[in-house]
Length: 218
Image 1 (cartoon, helix red, strand yellow):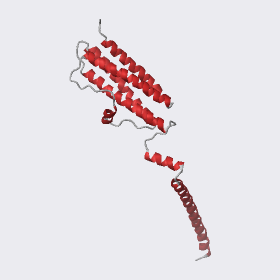
Image 2 (image 1 turned 30 degrees about the vertical axis):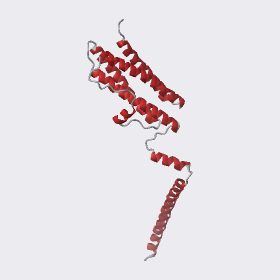
Image 3 (image 1 turned 180 degrees about the vertical axis):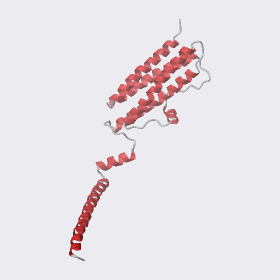
Image 4 (image 1 turned 90 degrees about the vertical axis):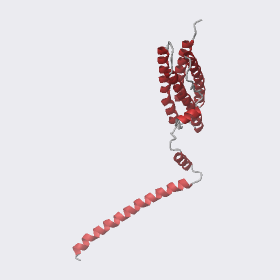
C-alpha cells in the first residue's frame, strides 16, 4: 500500500468513527427519553401516569374545563332530554301521518312544522354532550329505554285528542327542560343552558298553538 493510499484511507476511517459516535449519541438520547417515560409511567402515584391511563381508557372523552361530576350530571340530563325529543318527534310525525277530518290540512301542516322543529333539536343536544366529554345515545333501543314520553300505537285517534296529547307532552317537556337548565346552572355550563332557553321558548310555542287548536267554542 502506498503512502497516498494510507493518507486517503485515514480520513475515511475517521469519518466512519465520527458517524458511529453520532449514531450512538442519538440512540443514547432516545433510550434516555424512553427510560424517563417508563419511569414516569411506573410511578404508582404519578399524576401524569394517572392522566395518561385515564385518557387511554376513555378515548372519546373530550377535554373540558368542567368537572367530571358536571360532565356526568349534564350528560345524564341531556341524554334523557334527547330521548324525549326523539320520542316526541316520532309521535308528532305519527299523528301528522294519521291525521283525518275536516281540519286535515291545517293540522297536518301544523304537526309537520312541529316535527321539523323537534328534529332540529336532536343534533345540537347530542353534540353538546360530546363537547363536554360525555357519550350520547347510540341506538333506537337506547332511546326506547331512556325516553319518558309515552308512545301511542293506537290505530285511530281523534284529531283533537291527538292535539291535546301533544300539548300535554310539550308542556311536560318544557318543565323537564327547566330542570335541565337548573342542572347546567349548578355546574356553570352556560353554553348548554343558553341553548335550553331557546328550546323552552319553542316548546312553549308548540304547546300554545296546540292548546288554541283544541279550544272548543262555548
